[in-house]
Image 1 (cartoon, rainbow, N blue to C red):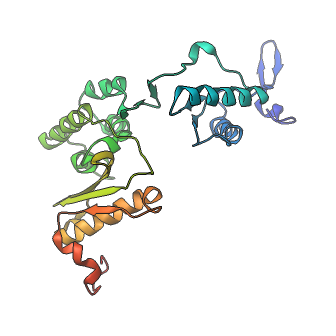
Image 2 (cartoon, rainbow, N blue to C red):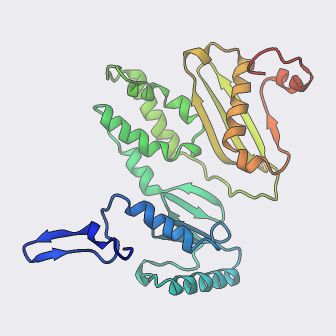
Image 3 (cartoon, helix red, strand yellow):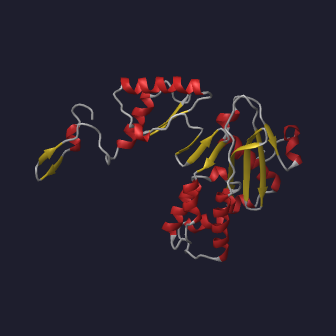
Length: 281
């Protein structure tokens, strides 16, 4: 705790008045403060060979020699700031590990088997609260599922305000299809800024989707169900919308160099030669 701020944590017990000298669990601003502190301390290493979320620190390296050096730098920095690590909770020189609900290896990033088991065993939601819980967990892995937004549309419709919660065969089919898609989710390849990016887009009557690839391997999927207004657009316009969505979402990866867009609509390949006459163009 900052000097002079300890009184804000004061509490009374039968044995007297107490104040925390260090930040405890449960304070409203504790998570944000702790994350900010970790980001500040590890700032010189972040995104170079360290990732951190709260007290979970991930060190990644190309070779074992680099890994040893990175660990030495990290542990030295933690020691300088009087931060301690518990050896029993540390894993060193791992080729595969689980981190924040993902399994990371040299092959790429995969979903955590234990989390997917929880989704697979999820019973039919009986109310909006249970449905929100399911979609919240499933949505965490939406980048692994092609057309996630389209598949889940019948379910998300139940979350709309003033909508009667009625579980129909269409909702059940969407529920089961989403669970199946998550169980069969592919391993996403690791991003490499030395390789060119490719975007593939498609559109259907009620949704749009796109995929970010390198060397033909998917890095992430993106999709969105369309509302009534956008459903009325032509296929040409929906494909335009899919491209805009993809470029906006993945702009940090794409803006550094040229990239390729693969589309189903041949007409879009002549967009540069056309006179712009519609808002979508």
